[in-house]
Length: 95
Image (cartoon, rainbow, N blue to C red; front, side, top):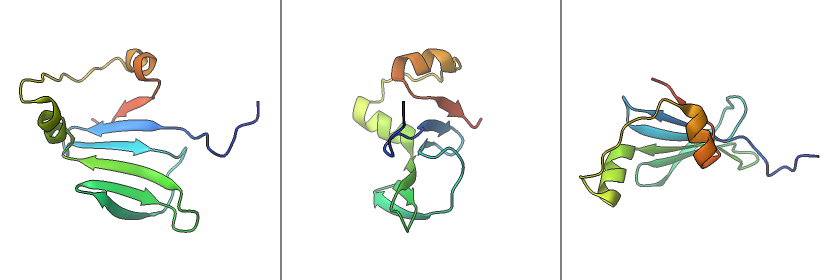
């Protein structure tokens, strides 16, 4: 089966020390330009093709608490295969 141009890898990385959730849309790092798309949401893209390379959500845990409330208990999962089967996305941690 031939891949279309719209198919791309998605890798999700959460950096707990900096509290940033990053979506990577490339197989390998690429140079790009970053712009703030919304309050503390940064999009890095290729200026020639306008293709999105990464999307960073700053202060991710604060945003989750604002939406779901302070009673939300979150514990980091360390079983990536389980998470991939649930979401269909490869998840990596930099920590």
